[in-house]
Length: 93
Length: 218
Image (tube, rainbow over the protein chains, first blue to last red):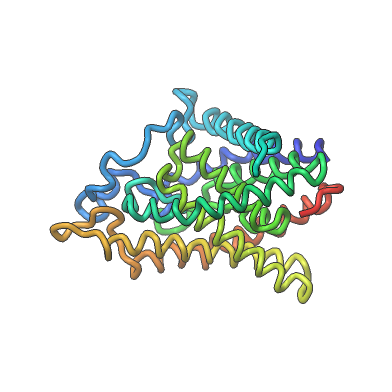
């Protein structure tokens, strides 16, 4: 099982740069400036909301889009495994 | 489908968290049971969570200057059960929010409830209801399609109520489009396109995992 899952995840990671083909953000996931174009103002609550994520939009430093995407994908896989291996060890009442 | 922080009011986000926390607590207990079933369970579950993370990165453009992606909610719900699927999707959404700014941190409750809870439970019960009546692959497709559309309805409601509740001097404080816009835009695109994509992904990936899973049982 393990070998097949590893191959499956490697293929999935290799496919993630396909997501870069889409130059548009999802409907309702716009950047702050896009509100100006859409409704003519930026809603108060949208300004300065959220955190400064270390790798915003799956961009890792200045590594370029494809490499950034693949590194982000690998980090995502590592976090998924880390989370559930940790959860298996933690005692929950 | 990932609602960013600031697009919904802090009160909406907190209501989402208040609803999600007890569900997470119960879901984690169910997930622990799954993990302790056999030694391969943790690899199997981690791989499926990683799959959900990766499939959400593959944005697909559609006409109208927008894009979307599959989530894998039905894949996880069918293979892991709805509670463990909900925890796996919530964990993935947490990493996406904290590390990559994809979806809000405060909005994690709302996002987990729509894509995780509503999506996984709708998919699971559709599959449970249909699984023995129609060919399995068709049931997988319908579960993926239905889970995705149900999740999109939840997102459309959460976003669309914002301008009905929070206006100041004629301007929206948070998301500016109401239900008459969010329903056609969010639910419409998922009924026509992303639900179909999720359905096809569900058929392909569930069939693959059924073949490799060995002794793991949900």
